[in-house]
Length: 431
Image (cartoon, rainbow, N blue to C red; front, side):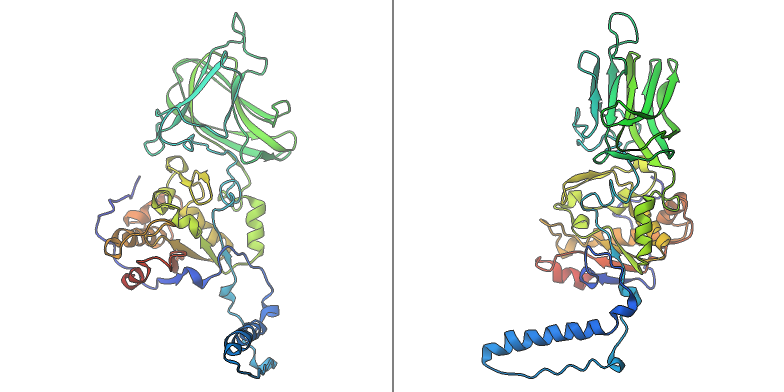
């Protein structure tokens, strides 16, 4: 990818005015939308009262002491809570991003979720037809080096003759995340990569969950050699009806072998055209958040560092992002909602981005302080991606993604819940 550098390359110059917030500085997993005036200094008095009550009833009672508590809640003693303390902490948990805020409707669009060894599980993709008509399996023939897995579909039946295909054809379908919510008259953008040396008559359609109700369809017709090399195909589907439990299916009644990769279905009217679900992103905007903290807590750590969120693998073209297994919350993410998209979302919401960085620890591992330099450099590179000039290595990657101006990244949040780990104190002395 353009702009990538080896991890042992020299550190970039430091950036001014970058401050860090510890993970404890902002409450986790909350999105707050509370009228500022109703939460003035009285909240501080309540907190003070709680602390005082604790001292009275738990600490001093042990020594048999008594105390008197006086509270002065006069209006002149109140203080306004700073507005920049109200915001959103986003974590990729329970499909909040993949299948939620991120508008991609296809689940496992690159067939990578089953792992690098083939043939692999293609869940949630399912086969239309039986083993007499179709053979489906993954192999490592993709045109993307970072996403080597592709799906090979061999059709054994024909539209006529001795081996006749079922009336609706055979193929594969994807139900998305618990069914695709397809809206009437809405336009959806389809893109996929195809390779085949055979003639092709492939129907791409949106149907009900049982395949009986057809909502929209598009046919790809090709002669032999038209798709001899991998080629990207893009088109629109406009639904004629509404169905909240739909699926995307690829079917044919023509024998031959065809490979698929990076099959995507996105609504055309995403929030500000940046790929977020319009309804959910609008709700976030209505919160009027002053900050957006991302991409999570445990999600950043991972159960193991192998599966931790790696920002540099979530930027660039969507098709070239390797994706990763979210081992903390137990599902695969294609990383369509990556570092760039989080920064863009903060900008779209008018919020200050707060990037949570991995400080060398997973939930089961920790990197000794003496070898933390690679993690420090990774953060410096991420800052360059967000704020660097388009002429810099990582700034040029951001510019190529359509944002030559720097993002206003002024804060990072270091780590998550590592206070009990052996190297925690030494780590923060180094940082």
